[in-house]
Amino acid sequence: MRALVIEHDPGVPAGLVEEWLSGRGADLDVWRIATDSREPDPGAYDLVVTLGSETAAYDDTVPWVAREQQLLRDAFAADVPVLGICFGSQSLARALGGRAMRAHRSEIGWIEIDSREPSLVPAGPWLQWHHDTFAAPAGATVLAHSAAGPQAYTIGRSLGVQFHPEVTPQIMEAWVAAYRHELDQQGVDPDRLLKETYDRAEESRAAAWRLFDGFLARARRVEEAVGGS
Image (cartoon, rainbow, N blue to C red):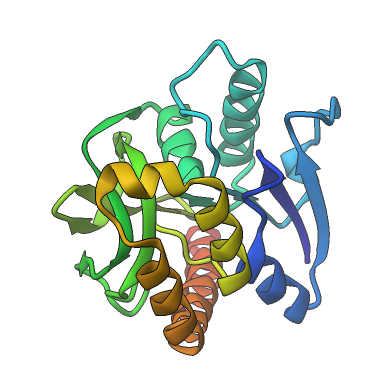
């Protein structure tokens, strides 16, 4: 299995999703899109993962935003499944005709979601850290919400999630150190957030595996259904 992982910022790495892919024996190609001028062909991969970012998915002043939009459209056209995480879910939605925009409220912390399909998208709690949101494209099925907005959707063989299933305690350590000002603005206690991340490490890893395995299994089912029709 060949997987293209789109990393937008060095501080937002693949974490648990990279661990999961490696455990599956996948051949990982990490495309650091902000600094790597390559133009990968998504058709050469079995799946694409697009990660979180400090950038807004609607900020067209950032040169690589348009490059990613085109790659995601090409992946969808080639029937290559995409897993979009946080920014990645917004970017995928926008690429396929939906919208990415500022949310009416930010979410930071471990938050349960209301899932219509918990076998694919467990209710969590999931780590949330975002100020933007998405409107799903036509043809998508929204599977989960929180008080702040939509949290997950499927379209074709792809899945977008607004939360961060990839986060490890080590990633959270770095985020708390780098973005303490955001936590202060939102009234979030950084020490409590970090402690909860460590306390939930095993259960969040297990939930992430269920999500990732469910994404892959669903992508295969959709492919088989289309191939058999």
